[in-house]
Length: 226
View 1 (tube, rainbow, N blue to C red):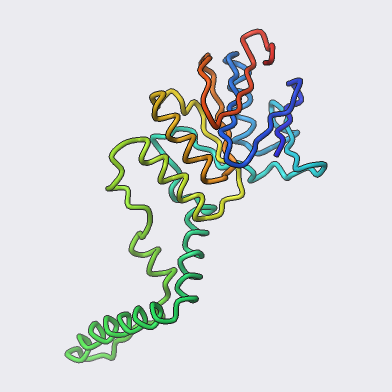
View 2 (view 1 turned 90 degrees about the vertical axis):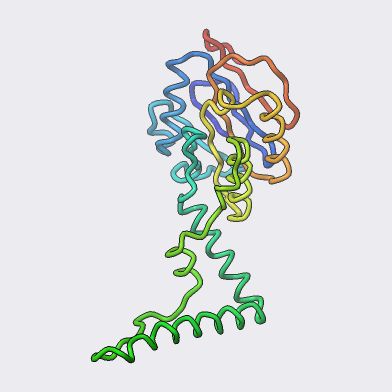
């Protein structure tokens, strides 16, 4: 995928499994680019841009999953949570033995609760049938965040969840490097590489380090590109 800003000389190539970094050191330009990509307004954004796959333009709206702060990851985003639920539902439908045992357990629980109504004067029962998606939603099934000991663990789980959801959007991190050590960046980049996802990091702090699995474009304070 190519990200083309009308104010920059060259497009930004966003390749699957590559941590693509756009380092914009001019604060005003950095703010305009961040605001534009989050808005999804494309050519109508304050810093106009377009997205391309080969010779075909990609719709700008909904193309990015923005992570404005790694301290507040969008775990509940519909593009992630909804697709993960569908994945679980599909696995359940394909596994007859598992589906049978879960259905039997659900009937047993429903029967046990319904028996409580026998001691009441009115007749009681369930309005809705058992459904795996509703069960997952009601009981808050999701990534076990209690097992995440560090910010890096959370980021790795977030990328893994995006992989489980077969996310087609570009994950957009803003100033992510500020929160991570050099070793943590390397570990995260390796995980991104094996995930094969589209990832773009917008950074405004000057950083001359070179990382494996990273592709970097730099726009300095004077708008010179390298």
